[in-house]
Length: 155
Length: 386
Image (cartoon, rainbow over all chains, first blue to last red; front, side, top):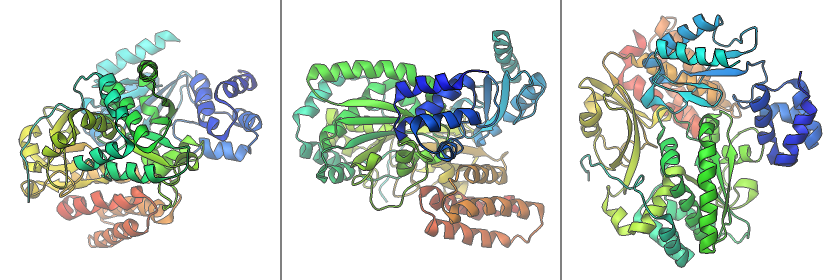
Protein backbone atom coordinates (compact mmCIF):
# COMPACT_ATOMS: atom_id res chain seq x y z
CA UNK A 1 0.00 0.00 0.00
CA UNK A 2 1.29 3.46 -0.82
CA UNK A 3 1.26 6.39 1.52
CA UNK A 4 -1.52 8.44 0.01
CA UNK A 5 -1.01 11.31 2.47
CA UNK A 6 2.43 12.12 1.12
CA UNK A 7 1.29 12.04 -2.47
CA UNK A 8 -1.70 14.30 -1.76
CA UNK A 9 0.58 16.77 0.03
CA UNK A 10 3.05 16.71 -2.83
CA UNK A 11 0.30 17.29 -5.41
CA UNK A 12 -1.26 20.09 -3.34
CA UNK A 13 2.13 21.82 -3.13
CA UNK A 14 2.35 21.61 -6.90
CA UNK A 15 -1.20 22.55 -7.88
CA UNK A 16 -2.32 24.62 -4.90
CA UNK A 17 -5.14 24.15 -2.42
CA UNK A 18 -7.87 26.07 -4.22
CA UNK A 19 -11.04 24.47 -5.44
CA UNK A 20 -9.69 24.53 -9.01
CA UNK A 21 -6.72 22.47 -7.83
CA UNK A 22 -9.03 19.52 -7.21
CA UNK A 23 -9.06 18.09 -10.74
CA UNK A 24 -5.27 18.18 -11.27
CA UNK A 25 -4.76 16.61 -7.84
CA UNK A 26 -7.22 13.78 -8.52
CA UNK A 27 -5.70 13.29 -11.98
CA UNK A 28 -2.25 13.14 -10.37
CA UNK A 29 -3.35 10.40 -7.97
CA UNK A 30 -4.92 8.36 -10.76
CA UNK A 31 -1.80 8.76 -12.89
CA UNK A 32 0.31 7.23 -10.11
CA UNK A 33 -2.10 4.74 -8.57
CA UNK A 34 -4.66 3.96 -11.31
CA UNK A 35 -7.77 4.79 -9.29
CA UNK A 36 -9.05 6.73 -6.28
CA UNK A 37 -9.45 4.92 -3.00
CA UNK A 38 -11.80 6.23 -0.31
CA UNK A 39 -8.75 7.06 1.82
CA UNK A 40 -7.25 9.09 -1.01
CA UNK A 41 -10.44 11.11 -1.47
CA UNK A 42 -10.79 11.75 2.27
CA UNK A 43 -7.16 12.86 2.36
CA UNK A 44 -7.71 15.26 -0.55
CA UNK A 45 -10.80 16.67 1.18
CA UNK A 46 -8.77 17.30 4.34
CA UNK A 47 -5.92 18.91 2.41
CA UNK A 48 -8.22 21.27 0.44
CA UNK A 49 -10.53 21.81 3.40
CA UNK A 50 -13.68 20.78 1.55
CA UNK A 51 -16.09 17.97 2.32
CA UNK A 52 -15.29 14.44 1.21
CA UNK A 53 -18.69 14.35 -0.50
CA UNK A 54 -17.57 17.23 -2.71
CA UNK A 55 -14.47 15.30 -3.70
CA UNK A 56 -16.40 12.11 -4.36
CA UNK A 57 -19.10 14.04 -6.20
CA UNK A 58 -16.54 15.54 -8.53
CA UNK A 59 -14.53 12.36 -9.01
CA UNK A 60 -17.55 10.20 -9.74
CA UNK A 61 -18.66 12.58 -12.50
CA UNK A 62 -15.59 11.86 -14.64
CA UNK A 63 -15.07 8.46 -16.22
CA UNK A 64 -11.28 8.77 -16.15
CA UNK A 65 -11.28 9.40 -12.39
CA UNK A 66 -12.11 5.84 -11.43
CA UNK A 67 -13.31 5.11 -7.93
CA UNK A 68 -13.37 1.34 -8.61
CA UNK A 69 -10.27 -0.82 -8.40
CA UNK A 70 -8.24 -0.56 -11.61
CA UNK A 71 -5.11 -2.25 -12.82
CA UNK A 72 -1.75 -0.71 -13.64
CA UNK A 73 -2.65 -0.67 -17.32
CA UNK A 74 -6.17 0.52 -18.07
CA UNK A 75 -7.23 -0.58 -21.52
CA UNK A 76 -10.09 1.54 -22.86
CA UNK A 77 -11.72 0.25 -25.99
CA UNK A 78 -13.59 2.77 -28.10
CA UNK A 79 -17.17 1.57 -28.56
CA UNK A 80 -18.53 4.42 -30.64
CA UNK A 81 -19.98 3.69 -34.05
CA UNK A 82 -16.97 3.69 -36.39
CA UNK A 83 -14.85 1.51 -34.11
CA UNK A 84 -17.85 -0.80 -33.69
CA UNK A 85 -18.20 -1.04 -37.47
CA UNK A 86 -14.51 -1.68 -38.02
CA UNK A 87 -13.98 -4.69 -35.78
CA UNK A 88 -14.17 -3.59 -32.15
CA UNK A 89 -15.82 -6.90 -31.27
CA UNK A 90 -12.84 -8.95 -32.49
CA UNK A 91 -10.44 -6.77 -30.53
CA UNK A 92 -12.47 -7.22 -27.35
CA UNK A 93 -12.56 -10.99 -27.92
CA UNK A 94 -8.78 -11.03 -28.35
CA UNK A 95 -8.22 -8.99 -25.21
CA UNK A 96 -10.65 -11.07 -23.14
CA UNK A 97 -9.02 -14.31 -24.27
CA UNK A 98 -5.54 -13.03 -23.58
CA UNK A 99 -6.21 -11.43 -20.21
CA UNK A 100 -8.84 -13.99 -19.15
CA UNK A 101 -11.20 -11.27 -17.95
CA UNK A 102 -14.40 -9.76 -19.28
CA UNK A 103 -15.02 -6.13 -20.17
CA UNK A 104 -15.39 -4.18 -16.93
CA UNK A 105 -13.04 -6.46 -14.98
CA UNK A 106 -9.49 -6.26 -13.67
CA UNK A 107 -6.96 -9.11 -13.69
CA UNK A 108 -6.35 -10.69 -10.27
CA UNK A 109 -2.73 -9.51 -10.30
CA UNK A 110 -4.09 -5.97 -10.84
CA UNK A 111 -2.01 -5.45 -13.96
CA UNK A 112 -4.80 -4.91 -16.50
CA UNK A 113 -8.30 -3.47 -16.55
CA UNK A 114 -10.52 -3.77 -19.57
CA UNK A 115 -13.23 -1.17 -20.10
CA UNK A 116 -15.23 0.32 -22.94
CA UNK A 117 -15.19 4.05 -23.53
CA UNK A 118 -16.87 6.59 -25.78
CA UNK A 119 -15.29 8.14 -28.89
CA UNK A 120 -11.56 8.78 -28.38
CA UNK A 121 -11.09 10.64 -31.66
CA UNK A 122 -9.45 8.04 -33.91
CA UNK A 123 -12.42 7.17 -36.14
CA UNK A 124 -10.30 7.40 -39.31
CA UNK A 125 -7.97 4.76 -37.88
CA UNK A 126 -10.54 2.48 -36.25
CA UNK A 127 -10.62 0.30 -34.25
CA UNK A 128 -8.72 2.16 -31.56
CA UNK A 129 -7.91 1.74 -27.88
CA UNK A 130 -6.15 3.72 -25.18
CA UNK A 131 -3.76 2.02 -22.78
CA UNK A 132 -3.48 4.55 -19.98
CA UNK A 133 -2.96 7.67 -22.10
CA UNK A 134 -1.33 6.03 -25.15
CA UNK A 135 -3.52 5.49 -28.22
CA UNK A 136 -3.18 2.38 -30.42
CA UNK A 137 -5.01 2.49 -33.73
CA UNK A 138 -5.91 0.44 -36.81
CA UNK A 139 -5.87 -2.64 -34.63
CA UNK A 140 -6.10 -6.23 -35.78
CA UNK A 141 -6.23 -9.20 -33.40
CA UNK A 142 -2.57 -9.97 -34.24
CA UNK A 143 -1.44 -6.41 -33.60
CA UNK A 144 -3.39 -6.37 -30.32
CA UNK A 145 -1.67 -9.54 -29.11
CA UNK A 146 1.75 -8.01 -29.82
CA UNK A 147 0.90 -4.79 -27.97
CA UNK A 148 -0.40 -6.60 -24.87
CA UNK A 149 2.60 -8.96 -24.87
CA UNK A 150 4.78 -5.85 -24.73
CA UNK A 151 2.93 -4.62 -21.64
CA UNK A 152 3.06 -8.05 -20.00
CA UNK A 153 6.84 -8.05 -20.32
CA UNK A 154 7.04 -4.57 -18.81
CA UNK A 155 5.70 -5.55 -15.40
CA UNK B 1 -29.65 28.58 -53.16
CA UNK B 2 -26.02 29.62 -53.46
CA UNK B 3 -23.65 26.67 -53.57
CA UNK B 4 -20.06 25.82 -54.31
CA UNK B 5 -18.42 22.64 -55.53
CA UNK B 6 -15.94 20.58 -53.60
CA UNK B 7 -12.63 22.45 -53.41
CA UNK B 8 -9.68 21.55 -51.24
CA UNK B 9 -8.12 24.42 -49.31
CA UNK B 10 -4.90 24.75 -47.33
CA UNK B 11 -5.27 27.46 -44.71
CA UNK B 12 -5.40 25.70 -41.36
CA UNK B 13 -2.28 23.61 -41.82
CA UNK B 14 -0.36 26.16 -43.94
CA UNK B 15 3.06 26.90 -42.45
CA UNK B 16 3.39 30.53 -41.45
CA UNK B 17 5.71 32.78 -39.47
CA UNK B 18 3.57 33.34 -36.36
CA UNK B 19 5.70 36.23 -35.14
CA UNK B 20 5.02 38.29 -38.23
CA UNK B 21 1.24 37.76 -37.96
CA UNK B 22 1.18 38.53 -34.24
CA UNK B 23 3.18 41.73 -34.67
CA UNK B 24 0.65 42.77 -37.29
CA UNK B 25 -2.25 41.91 -34.94
CA UNK B 26 -0.80 43.66 -31.91
CA UNK B 27 -0.41 46.86 -33.94
CA UNK B 28 -4.14 46.80 -34.68
CA UNK B 29 -6.68 48.23 -32.25
CA UNK B 30 -9.15 45.96 -30.50
CA UNK B 31 -11.93 47.44 -32.61
CA UNK B 32 -10.01 46.80 -35.86
CA UNK B 33 -9.41 43.15 -34.99
CA UNK B 34 -13.07 42.64 -34.15
CA UNK B 35 -14.15 44.41 -37.35
CA UNK B 36 -11.85 42.12 -39.35
CA UNK B 37 -13.54 39.07 -37.80
CA UNK B 38 -17.02 40.45 -38.41
CA UNK B 39 -16.13 41.31 -42.02
CA UNK B 40 -14.76 37.83 -42.63
CA UNK B 41 -18.09 36.24 -41.71
CA UNK B 42 -16.34 33.64 -39.55
CA UNK B 43 -18.65 31.47 -37.48
CA UNK B 44 -17.42 29.24 -34.66
CA UNK B 45 -15.99 25.93 -35.84
CA UNK B 46 -17.01 23.83 -32.84
CA UNK B 47 -20.46 23.18 -34.24
CA UNK B 48 -22.79 25.83 -32.85
CA UNK B 49 -21.63 28.44 -35.35
CA UNK B 50 -21.85 31.64 -33.32
CA UNK B 51 -20.18 34.57 -35.17
CA UNK B 52 -16.68 34.90 -33.69
CA UNK B 53 -16.47 38.67 -34.21
CA UNK B 54 -19.72 39.17 -32.32
CA UNK B 55 -18.53 37.03 -29.41
CA UNK B 56 -15.34 39.09 -29.17
CA UNK B 57 -17.32 42.31 -29.46
CA UNK B 58 -19.52 41.38 -26.51
CA UNK B 59 -16.55 40.29 -24.40
CA UNK B 60 -14.61 43.46 -25.33
CA UNK B 61 -17.51 45.64 -24.18
CA UNK B 62 -17.32 44.26 -20.60
CA UNK B 63 -15.71 46.66 -18.13
CA UNK B 64 -14.26 44.02 -15.79
CA UNK B 65 -10.43 44.26 -15.86
CA UNK B 66 -9.85 40.51 -15.54
CA UNK B 67 -10.97 38.49 -18.57
CA UNK B 68 -10.17 35.10 -20.04
CA UNK B 69 -9.66 33.45 -23.40
CA UNK B 70 -10.56 29.77 -23.26
CA UNK B 71 -9.65 27.37 -26.03
CA UNK B 72 -12.15 24.54 -26.17
CA UNK B 73 -10.07 21.46 -27.00
CA UNK B 74 -12.58 19.03 -25.49
CA UNK B 75 -13.30 17.49 -28.85
CA UNK B 76 -15.70 14.69 -27.94
CA UNK B 77 -18.31 14.60 -30.68
CA UNK B 78 -18.29 11.09 -32.15
CA UNK B 79 -16.56 11.21 -35.51
CA UNK B 80 -14.59 14.40 -34.86
CA UNK B 81 -10.82 14.30 -34.65
CA UNK B 82 -9.72 17.44 -36.49
CA UNK B 83 -8.82 19.41 -33.36
CA UNK B 84 -6.41 16.68 -32.31
CA UNK B 85 -4.73 16.90 -35.70
CA UNK B 86 -4.60 20.71 -35.54
CA UNK B 87 -3.03 20.64 -32.06
CA UNK B 88 -0.62 17.97 -33.19
CA UNK B 89 0.53 19.82 -36.30
CA UNK B 90 0.02 23.57 -35.74
CA UNK B 91 -0.39 24.21 -32.00
CA UNK B 92 1.54 27.47 -32.41
CA UNK B 93 -1.35 28.82 -34.48
CA UNK B 94 -3.84 27.90 -31.75
CA UNK B 95 -1.78 29.85 -29.22
CA UNK B 96 -1.44 32.70 -31.72
CA UNK B 97 -5.21 32.85 -32.18
CA UNK B 98 -5.64 32.98 -28.41
CA UNK B 99 -3.25 35.91 -28.14
CA UNK B 100 -5.12 37.74 -30.93
CA UNK B 101 -8.41 37.07 -29.13
CA UNK B 102 -6.73 38.35 -25.97
CA UNK B 103 -5.79 41.57 -27.71
CA UNK B 104 -9.32 41.95 -29.10
CA UNK B 105 -11.10 41.65 -25.75
CA UNK B 106 -8.24 42.86 -23.48
CA UNK B 107 -7.55 39.54 -21.75
CA UNK B 108 -4.16 38.55 -20.39
CA UNK B 109 -4.93 34.95 -19.50
CA UNK B 110 -5.60 32.00 -21.74
CA UNK B 111 -6.70 28.51 -20.76
CA UNK B 112 -6.60 25.49 -23.04
CA UNK B 113 -9.04 22.81 -21.88
CA UNK B 114 -7.71 19.59 -23.39
CA UNK B 115 -9.77 16.42 -23.24
CA UNK B 116 -8.21 13.63 -21.17
CA UNK B 117 -8.24 11.33 -24.18
CA UNK B 118 -5.60 13.59 -25.78
CA UNK B 119 -3.27 13.69 -22.79
CA UNK B 120 -0.57 11.92 -24.80
CA UNK B 121 -0.17 15.17 -26.77
CA UNK B 122 0.56 17.24 -23.67
CA UNK B 123 4.40 16.99 -23.50
CA UNK B 124 4.72 18.17 -27.07
CA UNK B 125 2.08 20.89 -26.60
CA UNK B 126 3.90 22.21 -23.52
CA UNK B 127 7.13 22.42 -25.50
CA UNK B 128 5.36 24.44 -28.18
CA UNK B 129 3.83 26.62 -25.48
CA UNK B 130 7.22 27.41 -24.01
CA UNK B 131 8.39 28.56 -27.45
CA UNK B 132 5.25 30.63 -27.79
CA UNK B 133 5.68 32.38 -24.44
CA UNK B 134 9.27 33.17 -25.38
CA UNK B 135 8.21 34.62 -28.73
CA UNK B 136 5.42 36.72 -27.18
CA UNK B 137 7.96 38.00 -24.66
CA UNK B 138 10.30 39.03 -27.48
CA UNK B 139 7.52 41.00 -29.12
CA UNK B 140 6.95 42.62 -25.75
CA UNK B 141 3.36 41.47 -25.33
CA UNK B 142 1.88 40.13 -22.13
CA UNK B 143 -0.27 37.00 -22.51
CA UNK B 144 -0.01 33.75 -20.57
CA UNK B 145 -1.60 30.43 -21.42
CA UNK B 146 -2.00 27.41 -19.19
CA UNK B 147 -3.55 23.97 -19.58
CA UNK B 148 -6.47 22.26 -17.88
CA UNK B 149 -7.08 18.60 -18.54
CA UNK B 150 -10.45 16.94 -18.84
CA UNK B 151 -11.13 13.47 -17.52
CA UNK B 152 -13.45 11.81 -19.96
CA UNK B 153 -16.74 13.70 -20.00
CA UNK B 154 -18.33 14.62 -23.33
CA UNK B 155 -20.51 17.25 -21.67
CA UNK B 156 -17.45 19.33 -20.76
CA UNK B 157 -17.32 20.43 -24.39
CA UNK B 158 -20.42 22.50 -23.54
CA UNK B 159 -18.97 25.90 -22.66
CA UNK B 160 -20.44 26.42 -19.20
CA UNK B 161 -19.84 22.79 -18.20
CA UNK B 162 -16.24 23.31 -19.26
CA UNK B 163 -15.97 26.32 -16.92
CA UNK B 164 -17.34 24.24 -14.06
CA UNK B 165 -14.73 21.60 -14.79
CA UNK B 166 -11.90 24.16 -14.90
CA UNK B 167 -13.12 25.40 -11.51
CA UNK B 168 -12.84 21.89 -10.10
CA UNK B 169 -16.49 20.87 -10.07
CA UNK B 170 -18.75 18.37 -11.76
CA UNK B 171 -19.14 19.36 -15.39
CA UNK B 172 -22.77 20.40 -15.17
CA UNK B 173 -23.92 23.16 -17.55
CA UNK B 174 -25.04 26.46 -16.06
CA UNK B 175 -28.20 28.41 -16.77
CA UNK B 176 -27.91 31.00 -19.51
CA UNK B 177 -27.99 33.96 -19.35
CA UNK B 178 -25.56 35.14 -18.14
CA UNK B 179 -23.53 34.20 -21.21
CA UNK B 180 -19.79 33.51 -20.99
CA UNK B 181 -18.89 36.90 -22.43
CA UNK B 182 -20.42 38.41 -19.28
CA UNK B 183 -19.72 35.70 -16.73
CA UNK B 184 -17.56 32.81 -17.85
CA UNK B 185 -14.73 30.99 -16.15
CA UNK B 186 -14.24 32.11 -12.51
CA UNK B 187 -17.22 34.39 -13.10
CA UNK B 188 -15.16 36.66 -15.37
CA UNK B 189 -15.94 37.77 -18.93
CA UNK B 190 -14.69 34.99 -21.18
CA UNK B 191 -14.39 34.34 -24.86
CA UNK B 192 -14.46 30.60 -25.39
CA UNK B 193 -13.50 29.49 -28.88
CA UNK B 194 -12.91 26.20 -30.61
CA UNK B 195 -9.37 25.12 -31.57
CA UNK B 196 -10.02 25.50 -35.30
CA UNK B 197 -11.76 28.86 -34.87
CA UNK B 198 -8.68 30.26 -33.14
CA UNK B 199 -6.38 29.07 -35.92
CA UNK B 200 -8.74 30.58 -38.47
CA UNK B 201 -8.66 33.98 -36.75
CA UNK B 202 -4.89 34.01 -37.08
CA UNK B 203 -5.17 33.21 -40.79
CA UNK B 204 -7.73 35.98 -41.24
CA UNK B 205 -5.30 38.46 -39.72
CA UNK B 206 -2.59 37.16 -42.05
CA UNK B 207 -4.56 37.09 -45.30
CA UNK B 208 -7.24 39.67 -44.58
CA UNK B 209 -10.99 39.31 -44.09
CA UNK B 210 -11.76 39.76 -47.79
CA UNK B 211 -9.79 36.69 -48.82
CA UNK B 212 -11.67 34.54 -46.30
CA UNK B 213 -15.01 36.06 -47.26
CA UNK B 214 -14.45 35.03 -50.89
CA UNK B 215 -14.61 31.39 -49.83
CA UNK B 216 -17.88 29.65 -49.06
CA UNK B 217 -21.45 30.94 -49.26
CA UNK B 218 -23.55 33.72 -47.73
CA UNK B 219 -24.36 31.70 -44.62
CA UNK B 220 -21.12 29.72 -44.38
CA UNK B 221 -18.01 31.71 -45.14
CA UNK B 222 -14.54 30.28 -45.50
CA UNK B 223 -13.23 26.77 -45.38
CA UNK B 224 -13.46 24.13 -42.70
CA UNK B 225 -11.61 21.04 -41.61
CA UNK B 226 -13.68 17.86 -42.00
CA UNK B 227 -13.13 14.60 -40.16
CA UNK B 228 -14.12 11.85 -42.58
CA UNK B 229 -14.75 8.32 -41.35
CA UNK B 230 -16.94 5.25 -41.75
CA UNK B 231 -17.41 3.47 -45.07
CA UNK B 232 -14.93 5.41 -47.15
CA UNK B 233 -11.76 4.39 -48.97
CA UNK B 234 -10.09 7.61 -47.80
CA UNK B 235 -10.78 8.29 -44.12
CA UNK B 236 -8.93 11.24 -42.60
CA UNK B 237 -8.81 15.00 -42.30
CA UNK B 238 -9.58 17.33 -45.19
CA UNK B 239 -9.90 21.08 -45.38
CA UNK B 240 -12.67 22.00 -47.81
CA UNK B 241 -14.40 25.16 -48.93
CA UNK B 242 -17.87 25.42 -47.40
CA UNK B 243 -20.97 25.27 -49.56
CA UNK B 244 -20.74 21.85 -51.23
CA UNK B 245 -23.67 19.47 -51.43
CA UNK B 246 -23.69 16.13 -49.66
CA UNK B 247 -23.72 14.54 -53.14
CA UNK B 248 -20.43 16.22 -54.06
CA UNK B 249 -18.97 15.12 -50.76
CA UNK B 250 -20.10 11.53 -51.33
CA UNK B 251 -18.74 11.52 -54.88
CA UNK B 252 -15.32 12.39 -53.46
CA UNK B 253 -15.32 10.27 -50.32
CA UNK B 254 -17.96 7.54 -50.76
CA UNK B 255 -17.28 3.91 -51.58
CA UNK B 256 -19.87 3.81 -54.38
CA UNK B 257 -22.55 2.37 -52.11
CA UNK B 258 -23.19 5.18 -49.62
CA UNK B 259 -26.74 5.09 -48.27
CA UNK B 260 -26.47 7.77 -45.60
CA UNK B 261 -24.13 10.41 -44.25
CA UNK B 262 -24.27 11.47 -40.63
CA UNK B 263 -23.30 15.14 -40.66
CA UNK B 264 -22.23 16.67 -37.34
CA UNK B 265 -21.76 13.52 -35.29
CA UNK B 266 -24.17 11.92 -32.85
CA UNK B 267 -25.74 15.32 -32.19
CA UNK B 268 -26.01 16.05 -35.91
CA UNK B 269 -28.26 15.06 -38.77
CA UNK B 270 -28.59 11.93 -40.87
CA UNK B 271 -28.87 12.62 -44.60
CA UNK B 272 -30.22 9.72 -46.69
CA UNK B 273 -29.24 9.08 -50.29
CA UNK B 274 -32.39 10.66 -51.76
CA UNK B 275 -31.50 13.97 -50.14
CA UNK B 276 -27.77 14.06 -51.05
CA UNK B 277 -28.32 16.29 -54.08
CA UNK B 278 -30.32 19.01 -52.39
CA UNK B 279 -28.59 19.24 -49.04
CA UNK B 280 -25.81 21.78 -48.53
CA UNK B 281 -23.15 21.13 -45.89
CA UNK B 282 -23.12 24.38 -43.92
CA UNK B 283 -25.34 26.61 -41.85
CA UNK B 284 -27.93 26.93 -44.66
CA UNK B 285 -28.33 23.14 -44.75
CA UNK B 286 -26.80 20.69 -42.33
CA UNK B 287 -24.20 22.30 -40.06
CA UNK B 288 -21.23 20.34 -38.78
CA UNK B 289 -18.39 20.78 -36.37
CA UNK B 290 -16.46 18.61 -38.79
CA UNK B 291 -17.80 15.11 -38.20
CA UNK B 292 -18.75 13.32 -41.44
CA UNK B 293 -19.58 9.63 -41.22
CA UNK B 294 -20.45 7.59 -44.24
CA UNK B 295 -22.57 4.46 -44.05
CA UNK B 296 -22.98 2.02 -46.94
CA UNK B 297 -25.89 -0.32 -47.59
CA UNK B 298 -24.36 -3.13 -45.51
CA UNK B 299 -24.93 -1.12 -42.31
CA UNK B 300 -28.01 -1.27 -40.12
CA UNK B 301 -29.23 2.20 -39.25
CA UNK B 302 -30.80 0.67 -36.14
CA UNK B 303 -27.29 -0.13 -34.92
CA UNK B 304 -26.17 3.40 -35.70
CA UNK B 305 -29.11 4.93 -33.83
CA UNK B 306 -28.71 2.52 -30.91
CA UNK B 307 -25.02 3.37 -30.66
CA UNK B 308 -25.77 7.11 -30.55
CA UNK B 309 -28.54 6.75 -27.97
CA UNK B 310 -26.33 4.58 -25.80
CA UNK B 311 -23.69 7.30 -26.08
CA UNK B 312 -26.11 10.04 -24.99
CA UNK B 313 -27.62 7.99 -22.17
CA UNK B 314 -24.09 7.63 -20.77
CA UNK B 315 -22.90 11.17 -21.41
CA UNK B 316 -25.98 13.06 -20.22
CA UNK B 317 -24.84 14.86 -17.07
CA UNK B 318 -28.09 13.92 -15.35
CA UNK B 319 -28.78 17.39 -14.08
CA UNK B 320 -32.06 18.10 -15.91
CA UNK B 321 -34.89 15.62 -16.17
CA UNK B 322 -35.81 15.89 -19.88
CA UNK B 323 -32.31 14.89 -20.92
CA UNK B 324 -31.54 12.37 -18.16
CA UNK B 325 -34.78 10.45 -18.46
CA UNK B 326 -35.35 11.22 -22.13
CA UNK B 327 -32.07 9.68 -23.30
CA UNK B 328 -32.75 6.48 -21.36
CA UNK B 329 -36.33 6.22 -22.57
CA UNK B 330 -35.42 6.78 -26.20
CA UNK B 331 -32.86 3.99 -25.91
CA UNK B 332 -35.26 1.61 -24.20
CA UNK B 333 -38.00 2.64 -26.62
CA UNK B 334 -36.15 1.72 -29.82
CA UNK B 335 -35.10 -1.57 -28.23
CA UNK B 336 -38.74 -2.38 -27.48
CA UNK B 337 -39.80 -1.49 -31.02
CA UNK B 338 -37.05 -3.67 -32.44
CA UNK B 339 -38.03 -6.63 -30.27
CA UNK B 340 -41.69 -6.17 -31.24
CA UNK B 341 -42.74 -5.61 -27.62
CA UNK B 342 -44.62 -2.48 -28.67
CA UNK B 343 -46.35 -1.43 -31.88
CA UNK B 344 -44.25 0.37 -34.45
CA UNK B 345 -46.38 3.48 -33.98
CA UNK B 346 -44.64 3.81 -30.62
CA UNK B 347 -41.88 5.47 -32.66
CA UNK B 348 -44.20 8.45 -33.12
CA UNK B 349 -44.42 8.80 -29.34
CA UNK B 350 -40.65 8.64 -29.13
CA UNK B 351 -40.31 11.40 -31.71
CA UNK B 352 -42.62 13.54 -29.55
CA UNK B 353 -40.35 12.82 -26.60
CA UNK B 354 -37.28 13.86 -28.61
CA UNK B 355 -39.08 17.08 -29.57
CA UNK B 356 -39.89 17.74 -25.91
CA UNK B 357 -36.23 17.23 -25.04
CA UNK B 358 -35.32 19.83 -27.65
CA UNK B 359 -37.55 22.41 -25.99
CA UNK B 360 -37.07 21.52 -22.35
CA UNK B 361 -33.44 20.44 -21.94
CA UNK B 362 -31.06 22.83 -20.29
CA UNK B 363 -28.14 22.58 -22.69
CA UNK B 364 -27.14 21.63 -26.19
CA UNK B 365 -26.70 17.95 -25.37
CA UNK B 366 -30.33 17.21 -24.56
CA UNK B 367 -31.51 19.69 -27.17
CA UNK B 368 -29.70 17.94 -30.00
CA UNK B 369 -30.41 14.27 -29.25
CA UNK B 370 -33.54 14.68 -31.35
CA UNK B 371 -31.56 15.69 -34.45
CA UNK B 372 -30.11 12.25 -35.10
CA UNK B 373 -33.14 10.51 -33.65
CA UNK B 374 -35.67 12.22 -35.88
CA UNK B 375 -33.60 12.10 -39.08
CA UNK B 376 -32.71 8.41 -38.67
CA UNK B 377 -36.18 7.28 -37.63
CA UNK B 378 -37.92 9.30 -40.34
CA UNK B 379 -35.62 8.20 -43.14
CA UNK B 380 -34.98 4.60 -42.10
CA UNK B 381 -38.13 3.70 -40.22
CA UNK B 382 -38.29 0.16 -41.62
CA UNK B 383 -34.73 -0.55 -40.43
CA UNK B 384 -35.65 0.48 -36.90
CA UNK B 385 -38.78 -1.70 -36.85
CA UNK B 386 -37.70 -4.91 -38.62
